Image (cartoon, rainbow, N blue to C red; front, side):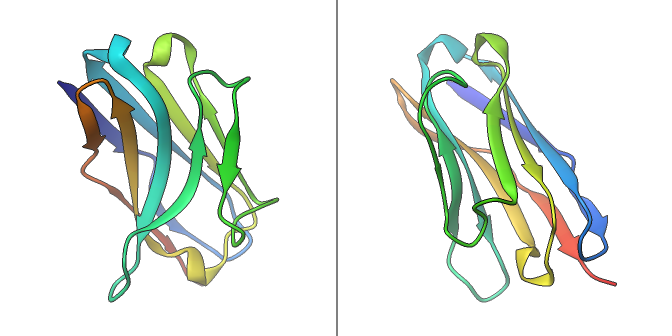
Length: 117
């Protein structure tokens, strides 16, 4: 099994920046593609960004965050990051880390991001 723990969320003003982290533990050797998703109140969970096995592998972004967010991975598959710049009120949501593994998909518990003046 794989455990995922997100951190780095908080309250930020419009135009500000935050960096989310996701720490993986357990059977990390089995982790393949990872990603960030978000869910705002009353909305379905949506894709934010995904990344392949290494930071030199593919990346994919939702149109709404292209040019503002950057996804990356640390060494040894243990960490996942999301650098969020030029934040907007519509980015407010709970952000979840996701890992695709040989044993199936795993989710973190989520971290709240609130963009408000």
